[in-house]
Length: 101
Image 1 (spheres, rainbow, N blue to C red):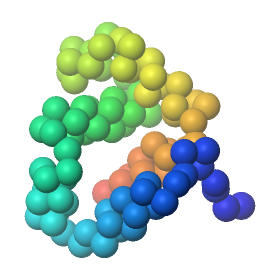
Image 2: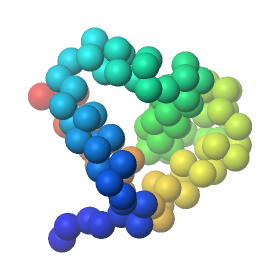
Image 3: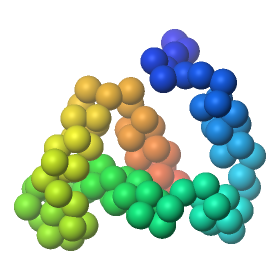
């Protein structure tokens, strides 16, 4: 079943098309360093790490200690894992299958 985002618009479509054109980590670093602040990239990376740890059933306290994420951030990521658009689940599954190849 195709997914339609409630946030979709032309500018976001163009952004995602641009991201899908990136082929290497170097290209990702170059693009995201120009597109985002260092803090924005670090925040996104932190959220992904939090999602990974939540998926591993690690406690909020340990996640906070390891990632320095606030409990509000951990809760928001957990809510997205449970009730969201399955974006975290999609990428976690892909990353897990890649490590088992």
